[in-house]
Length: 117
Image (tube, rainbow, N blue to C red):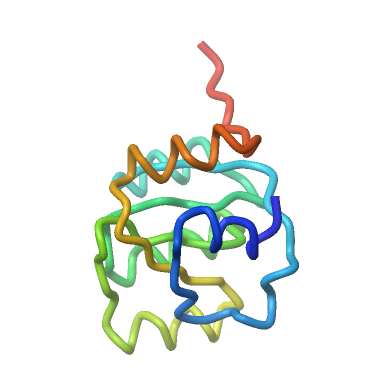
């Protein structure tokens, strides 16, 4: 799914990375636990989270995430946006809850990250 499609589906605002709206992501993952992100996610994934601290960007960098979507209208500080720009990570903002945003993306074909049982 293209970032531009995600933006439209979630009525999201792009905070940084506007020039990358045509890039593709293959998976979505919703979590406020960055340890789960590190354990289960790797590349071409968009993260939905309510956390707006530097650890989110550092985790995204390590997990090679394509984009981060802040849910529930959470707005990150300017320093966090600057850090995302330096690491070439797309940041978006939606007023949807994590559950609603995840459901919208999944219903339009964005797969979730598979976790082996």
